[in-house]
Image (tube, rainbow, N blue to C red; front, side, top):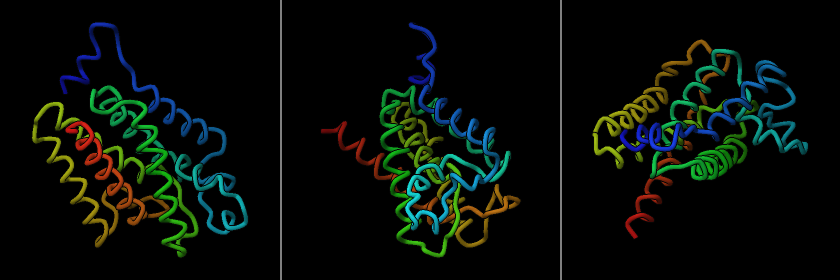
Length: 200
């Protein structure tokens, strides 16, 4: 974690502005519209009728305060590590974890799972951010603890595929496994791409 921590000296504190801004946006949306707002969540029927903005806004609204705080807390924690790492950064976080991953997750929901009528939350995108963060921290520190943390995410997702949610069992809607797996897949692609680019 030396790279991330070194940003706290020699030039002041480097803050994860993109992550903080996106987290603040989710908090504001919840404060204004409440949980699972009808105007913004992923609603398949309304998307088919032309309300395509829901493919994007659905990721930033949440079911309730618990759902919101879990996701916002994870976004800020992971965002700090990734944005301040020399192997990560704000641009990669925004373009890869949010634009690319969010687009692919929404595409999987819409084109690959017509049975899903409603969806909301950042958790699938956070899976992408989790994977790339563990990857860059392992490359930066050489510590295997980051690989162990990555393996725990894979184990958790595998468990939830067959037995149900580990941390969100009391939420009104269960986690969407297909969306979560897509988020992990995008994270792996981004991590491999970043490694190959640096080697070349």
